[in-house]
Image 1 (cartoon, rainbow, N blue to C red):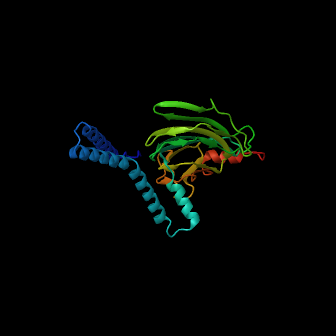
Image 2 (cartoon, helix red, strand yellow; image 1 turned 90 degrees about the vertical axis):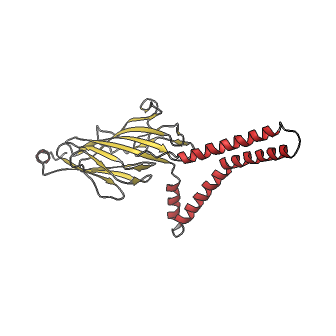
Image 3 (spheres, rainbow, N blue to C red; image 1 turned 30 degrees about the vertical axis):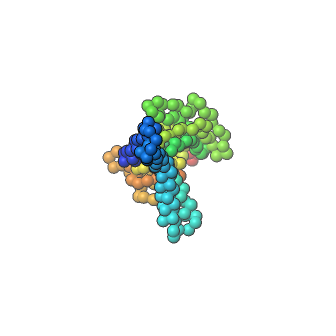
Length: 291
């Protein structure tokens, strides 16, 4: 859901610019008059108008912004413990919102008690602040040490102003971590005020066939949509990891989670083999002890 622009604010800025130019022209016009009362009056009036407009464009804006932040901080933290107050300030200070989140999960049954869980996300970010924001792109995942099925980062890309840039695997090397591979884009994705960018990420992990996947994000996410493509004989549920009732698409493979996911909270995808199905029953019956 796009964040609406603020036309009233821009109209106020334009009005102040026009008033400032008027004051400047008035001062310049006064220079053409002969010495006397009217020249001094017009010159000082023009200077006063110009200074007032300049203050309205600079000091007045920052002062109101600071007062608003101070009032919010005092009101929200009046009866809260210090630790909780810090968390509220962290959330309030977030300047980027993911306003469109599409996540697709592909489950592939390996027939040995494991599934390959491939996850692709398409996230559109908007800078809701008044200043530029330098946004890093960072992706990390765990290695589960299933022989022949390592965890993989398959793609990292972004699209901005109609131009698409492939970040990985073209230009970034995997970093060795104790818990598995990670990829990080060393540069910064610049977002101007009210500007958007879409980031694409695709990863693959191997998990137990009775398992789950948690995916957390660095920026707040609004009403994420999750699609699960599970093989025959499996059931699945999707939910916010911290709250909300789990959802499953009744007539489609997708589920929409209503609400705002705060930074570093997770989307949970849970799957399991449906032993009431004939496909799952045959897998269990024919499974070897080594599986």
